[in-house]
Amino acid sequence: MAITATKTSPYISKSKFLMGLQCPKLIWNVYNAKNLIPEPDATQEAAFAQGHQVGELAKQLYPGGIEVSTGTNDFDQVLQWSLEATKARKTLFEAGFAYGGGFARVDILSPAGKDAWDIIEVKSSTEVKDVNLLDLAFQVHVITGTGLKIRSCILAHISSDFVKSGTIDPHQFFVLEDVTSQISTLSRSIESKLDEMFGTIRLRQCPEIQIGPHCNNPYTCPLHDHCWGFLPEANVTTLYRGSAKGFKLLSKGTTALADIPDDFPLTDNQEIQRRTAQTGQPHIDKPAIKAFLSQLEYPVSYLDFETLGTAIPLFDGVRPYQQVPFQFSLHIVRSPGAEPEHHKFLAADANDPRPAFMRSLRDALPAEGSVVVYNASFELGRLKECSDLMPEFRPWVNSIKRRIVDLLLPFRGFRYYHPRQAGSASMKAVLPALTGKGYDHLDIQDGTTASLQFMRAMFGGISAGEQAAIRQQLDDYCHLDTFGMVRIVAALDSLVE
Ligand code: SF4
Image 1 (cartoon, helix red, strand yellow):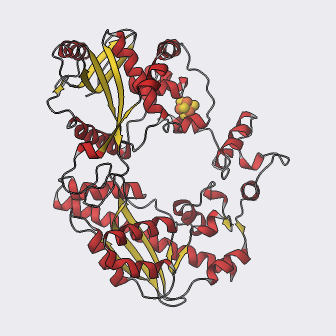
Image 2 (tube, protein in one colour; image 1 turned 90 degrees about the vertical axis):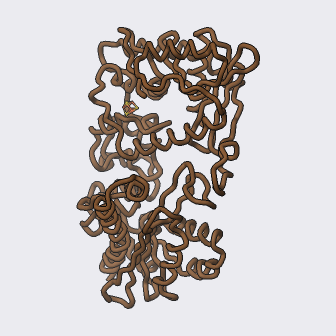
């Protein structure tokens, strides 16, 4: 539950502290121009919900723990209840503490020895990141400031080796990593960092901070669109594999790709970006495109998967975050110039979709000819995982591997590049740039939304009518992923005729 600071001097919570570390401009705006901070979108909301589920599972590691602040968002009450609860010497969930302007809500606080505590921070990731340590150091600074003793600092993160088999055992699911020694060093720096942040928050004017790599590290800043909005469409931050060069150019006042000075060192692909930005015309390497197209053998099958990946696996035999395919679209062009024929699969219920997915695909996919995908490693990876689970499919999967043609390659290799791609070789950038038709008219426009909507349809307890609407939207989206590939190949063909 969100806590609202009620003091004239604002408290800095652990999430705001991390924002302050990322950028002074961000924390200033959080406290002085909150209206600029957008509400979380559906993807972020889903990530929060997933984090909450992981947190709930972690509580099972400490049976008998007390939920400290359930049922209130009154700041002072949370603090009072939490301090009182420490007297019981029981494990506490979500206890809240304040000290020196910092406010920390602790995932799990477990009594250790006679008068100390272990602090356990639960993370939905499969590894410890630097930002997790700073988060924990902030909590230790606040808690020890209130007079409590901390014995150990533990990060409970998800084990990447975990594979679901029946009911999930939290002891198998989590890795408890003792990071006490790192935290004791880091927590000494927290006080001065907090002082600095309060100084920033109290400034009358927003600090002038240039955009840079910090805007996406460790998280994409919520003010990203606001701060980056001044850049022209074809701007220097879109240089292919050239982030550092882009920011160097920005610092010298060059924002547009077309204005990059002639003597500025660029790679061949970046040079293509500069030239096409200046001319507005695409770069077309006809011999390379011809060679690419000459690999295609009919019937040509255009194939795309949609997948879901959750922190807590939904099905047996699945690892945390493993991508489980629930949908495919397949367009088959039997001979040059023939009308594409469409086949599709979309899981019917909330059971493991993989057996039916694999059977449907095996039935629909021609036994010969090329199989065109966009970013082959993704589809091949899913097929391999499915055949590991269902070895009867292995010979068939092996026979597909030899027939795969990756349509990403000519674009990633800049064999074709249109300035509207803005440095991206993704299907979402290439399709509209090359064919003039994109995803804008669809309700679902990307794979993440497809996954979230499928989960909503299957597990969200929505009406049959809403489910049917979502299934139609998923069909439309996945259909365009493969029909788009048909169009891209046709467009490439016409370029080299
Ligand atoms: S987008 Fe970048 S510069 Fe702007 S507030 Fe965020 S981190 Fe700071």
